[in-house]
Length: 414
Image 1 (cartoon, rainbow, N blue to C red):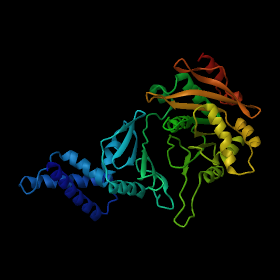
Image 2 (cartoon, rainbow, N blue to C red; image 1 turned 30 degrees about the horizontal axis):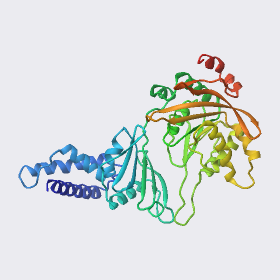
Image 3 (cartoon, rainbow, N blue to C red; image 1 turned 135 degrees about the vertical axis):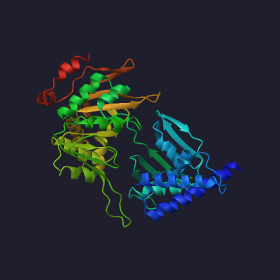
Image 4 (cartoon, rainbow, N blue to C red; image 1 turned 60 degrees about the vertical axis):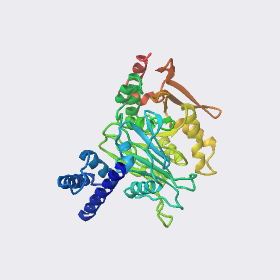
């Protein structure tokens, strides 16, 4: 009975806050500070009335204000997990099975939702993104106002219930040095990667889901010299790094009439018309790999991420994806183009303890044997840590032009 009264009180104050938000013309998603001010006023007024015995008192005013703000301006029952810095991802398999990931490990929460609550949450999340989901478009990728990435698969495509994933943008590192502090990189490997970025090498970051590819890409991008112009292209805005001359672009869904869609491939081509000094592609998944390779092969330095279980598999995938661009694209053209375009492959992995580690940094010499691209291990995983390998990076003249003695740097790592 006490829970019922508490729920009724929250619902009553919730309605009051929503009415005031509508009356003042506040956008609750963008003006959460105003919503909090309104909620504090409503709770304060209620507390004053409770002194007369006309209404039941609020047990904890601060908790009540937080609940009201989460309901009106945030994302209701999910808001505590969105606010928790330890939570990396949230997903809903059905209303009674809500999971979170902490430190790389999955946990089933005790949160129980209704179908209506999940539907309302998805609609509210998509409201500010300008993206939609319906029977004709049963998948959606969108960015929440806080920078978290939302992915929804509509019921009918997913069995039994609409599947929801929220991948939080958790900033644990913004520079390579911070990855060293986290244990993801060794100091020498971080120094080498920073030197490689400054020298203008083309870098492919590979790894599995949630391995930390985007974080590593952001840290690499932060090492780009400030005098260069950077253009980035991605499906949903996830790349974030400090730079004075940077234009970020993302894809766009088709409209209701089936037109107006902007593919990642379109953005890569458009980027080349914008006087770039560097090109960054958030994640290569399909035929846009061909356009990226052609750009890199023309002398434009760049970097991207790609799903793969090792550096070798990443190169194999980079040779396969361009074939999706059309029947006239053959492996005889693609393989030597990949060998000539990619300079370094950095593989990052999530270990069994939930820690993210760079496990290998491979140099691509540009030579091929048959249809196999020749590589050299610059750094490799041995005896439980990242150690100096026997290989050297390609394009040593690029390091020399940048005033970097890369051979001395690598010899000190032995």
